[in-house]
Length: 321
Ligand code: ADP
Ligand code: MG
Image (cartoon, rainbow, N blue to C red; front, side):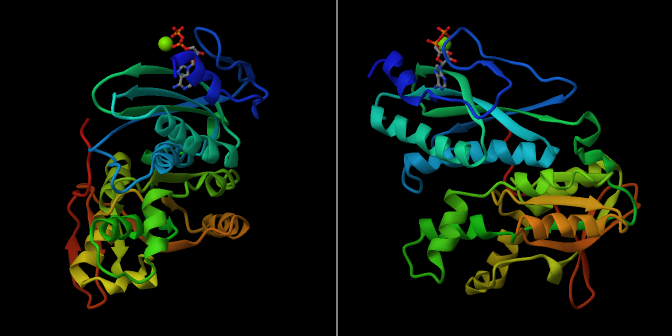
């Protein structure tokens, strides 16, 4: 299949976003927003670094690549609108596999009503997918990491550690309880855009998405805001069946397991009920897991049930490139 046929195959017949003036088909795409902040993010996914053919189908690789970008916009409080895809294709990947990658992305894109408006297709040695997402927000409602304040409630959506457990199950041929649930959470995560957009009547909320683990994301908000985090270990939501693993593995997934794509946030006690309403409306689980304290060194502390306290190290999966 030549590039022309490939582009024709992945090109949408119609666009959901009326702001698009030109999608695929010219040297660049064109859209216009009036009185809105444009919010954009890009992520690169490289074979054998971020995914392998052993644990993900091509459909799932595409799905997850776009999910990670949608999650970034959820963490900014922005409404996602368009995406562009640059793909580097090695010889050993077939045309139909590449089309499947794009089909996986398209399937998630339809659910979130976003449009593919451009990209680039080239050959190379390592399968690499770079997705650029573009969205919009009211300029006063962009959600930053630096706005957490002392006495805020710290909350998180969903359950943590599922994707980490799912990857472990894919890599080990043993029998596991609820295997399909955990594996799906690894292969096809659910970004929390709907929930994030329904926070629009909250005046101040710090948000970050859990792509590199709770420890890392907590530290990022704490450092950006110049505050400390106090987390209660027993309040951090995990799936019941995470307990099939030994305690150290459970803790590892819960604090350092990445790619759950849940949202971590802080909000004042007064506005916390609004967060719960947004959660109810979108059928999203939301849990208060601690509070923000004023402390100059910006650390994350974990309080155990037995009243012991330890400092959480900022490890987990940090991709530097
Ligand atoms: P140019 O030579 O001007 O860069 P291309 O032949 O690379 O144009 O692409 C033609 C059109 O197809 C452009 O609109 C481009 O954005 C789009 N396109 C190319 N590759 C992809 C892709 N992988 N995903 C989405 N759109 C693509
Ligand atoms: Mg090109």
